[in-house]
Image 1 (cartoon, chains in turn red, cyan, brown, orange):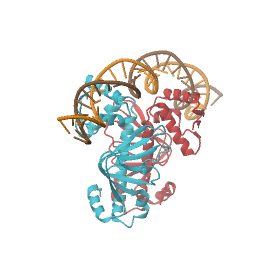
Image 2: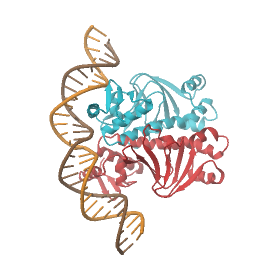
Image 3: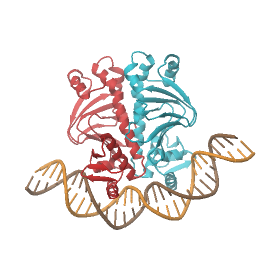
Image 4: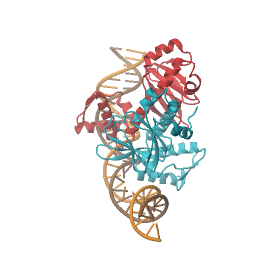
Length: 208
Length: 208
DNA sequence: TTTTTTCTGTTGCATAAGCAACAAAAACAT
DNA sequence: ATGTTTTTGTTGCTTATGCAACAGAAAAAA
């Protein structure tokens, strides 16, 4: 059975005390990735960013999360001494639980743990797909290839040569890990050379 | 219970007919990522590469796999029209099964499916960690930061300022998605400026 | 409304990093 | 042992891309 998150949550709220649901306002810290042993979070509504401060104090937005995405320390056991935390972009609702707990202790007790457990692999798989997609784009060697790779994916998903960007150009540059102004310049070249058309956040692919 | 892969396989080989185990010689194609609906593979021994040929015919090694790593079409539902396949680097043993099958059909039937199913989330989580690590490195903006980031991770894992590289410098450049000669140049600078020491594939960090 | 903040768009300049090409060393195969 | 392939190491040249700095548009807040 495929997990219907909304349905699940409705049932969960009435019955289960082990999982925690919390609300956050814009800019509040949802969780840090230090010493929260095997915590998993599901973003139920709103959006949030995974933010890193490295040893020199530079801030990076590592990931953006939106509805039904997973995050938490389990996913990010990277051996660096950076500060990592998740911060709300807008008002958020978040479901917290312990992965270890879910897997080993509460199995027999709670029906909702059961359902979640059964569907956890699916949820994580979605995440793997997102990560693989990003790696596919990041490994492209030029800004042009990164942009076109991203546009191709959006176009295919939309069954259309025309689509709108899911986030701002500033965020896109960040997602592709390139300089924003360099990206804007490349976008201009792509327009001038007739590869794409763009007005507002609507893009149309003109090739192939 | 944590999955002991070797123990599991020993039992599996005697008892279960649903999962398939196959052997491959160097350079043989293990699987393609087209129309193998929801296939998962576990590499039991040897090593293999995920190879991509894009529309212009360029070859890229997308991922390297080694013992106990997962791969397969489930993980890589990216909307591009590239050819993707996994090729043995050396002699390999690979376990094949269908994710859908595992989750929905064989649950009650086979004890070994059970065990595998219970531990699948863990195995996938390991993969998520690997992917996150790679993204962390790929998003760094300079070759220097990528190299030092990678070295820091190895150093931390090894509990030592000295460690050996897990693969060749050629492969490292590929993993970090940078030009090999540019990487060699940067390594030289790092040596000259006293950040690292290097002989053979042994690296020592000299800072902090 | 007005003010403030964020996002978009553009450009000049400097340089990091890609590319090409080669030779020596090491690893592998015959 | 000898040839073959892969890896390492290096360097000159070129350019793609990062950086800084700015102004106008759009969005958010007051």
